[in-house]
Length: 251
Image (cartoon, rainbow, N blue to C red; front, side, top):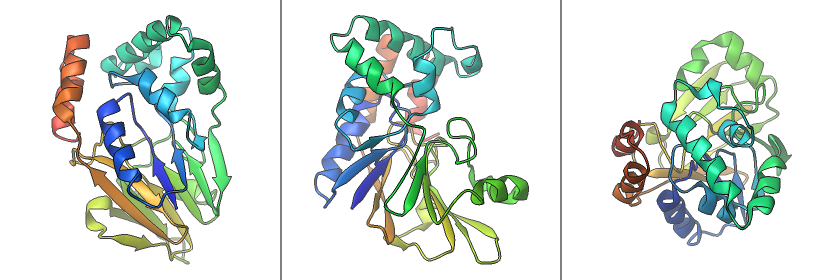
């Protein structure tokens, strides 16, 4: 069985809680779909933990953290921009700087194994394209993405957990995580599972989210963690309270 997680975003409290739950399951491998950094206060400890996992993909925040510019593309997300710039400063003085830098630079953007494809955004745009629930109504978009799916695809990026499924007539449907009880059997011709976010869920549920996959069924796991501790760290490190407070509402 594989544990699949994404969008940790430097939230060590959420990651520790998820790993504690994974330790209670019959998990053989951990796959991460990217975005170890950005938003949260503890990117370096999260990266050091992730360096022990079987598969870690690159997310858009991870890629941005490797650059040298001032992140003009992140201007609307001011807190994300600040935390990525701060990560660069922290990395420069870290004793494992070289190993962490190599690890982050060497991350693949897609992976295929065990009868499934894995990506941060979509198979059409690995880093930047979002697959939202309402994307099923954009037939050009969902069909273009769906054509690249062989059978099963796991993604993240939107922080919204749920399952996109396609019938044999090429009609796509979406099922949010809160309507999925227990194990979801993969039966349709094509399935895309958004595994949600460990570090900053945005589906009105504050609990960290990850997925267990046994090659036949998908199980979403929602794990409570010490949100107030994460918020306290953010507020101690920044005068921007917006991203700290959003952890309390899952948005």
